[in-house]
Amino acid sequence: MSINLKGRHFLTLLDFTPEEIHYLIELSEQVKKEKKEGVFPRRLEHKNIALLFEKNSTRTRCAFTVAAVDEGAHPEFLGKNDVQFGKKESVADTARVLGRMFDGIQFRGFKHETVEILAQHAGVPVWNGLTDSYHPTQILADFLTVKEQRGHLKGIVFSYVGDGRNNMANSLMIGAAKMGMDFRIVAPKSLFPDTALVRTATEIAEKTGGSILLTDHIEEGVRNADVIYTDVWVSMGEEAQFEERIKLLLPYQVNTKMMALTGKPDTIFLHCLPAFHDTLTDVGADINKRFGLTAMEVTNCVFESANSKVWDEAENRMHTIKAVMIATLAD
Ligand code: CP
Ligand code: NVA
Image (cartoon, rainbow, N blue to C red; front, side, top):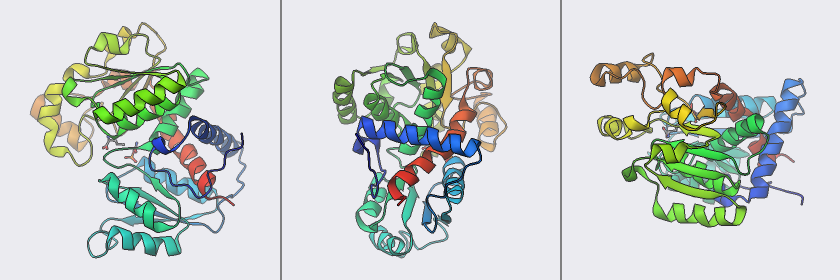
């Protein structure tokens, strides 16, 4: 079956079939290989890409920028303090202006509704670079990394540990269901994901041969895991909640004891990053001073171990984002 994604938005993986997701991962493998071989086909020549950011970013911003330049496109960074967006001009009006000048728009921000309004009005492909609800480009990089390590995605035992109701948990759950994985959210019950989204993911998994398990029991949740994944305990925009989250999530810290509970010596550790694995950040140092912790969601020992593939995963953000732009924009 030939797949054509030209003109499509990329807002959540719910909008894509398993075949379309496989296609994007295969295209990512192809563009990664090309770049390693020094081949640059410049499939986005003369395209202009708007990069609209309400929240901070290292990986997503750099991935879109480098991928666009590699393909001959021009990326333009539009930070929330640089443009009228939302302050003096509505999201819909901004979308209509940007759509007249740019060929594609990346948005990172707070409400998921904002990226939907942009998509409704822009008239050009809109890509979700993270909202409070979803982070779909990250999932492509995560799954490419798993495929590189394990050779396949179907049947992979994937345990996501920590804040089970954030954008990463939501997106991984949907993506894993589409790929037919045995997916577990290992979290305190108060941080389980939205019930309706779990129902949707479970229905998808029933069709793909995958499964979805929510558990607050660590041994059960990580047993046989091929992948242990975690994310920050406090996402962007939730900074006031550190104390409460630390209390809830400290038992769910990924450490060598938890890695051993998988029963597999080669369980991969993944994290979308940035990660609080030491005290070498302002936030990490402050948390150390206030709560005496030297790490939060993952210990430095696991983060720096041979099982940790976080740098491959971070690099893969660029190859997968390049694939998304090519698939939805290239002539
Ligand atoms: N993983 C990720 O989205 O990183 P940034 O916040 O640095 O873009
Ligand atoms: N859940 C995190 C992901 C960062 C890439 C956040 O939203 O801050």
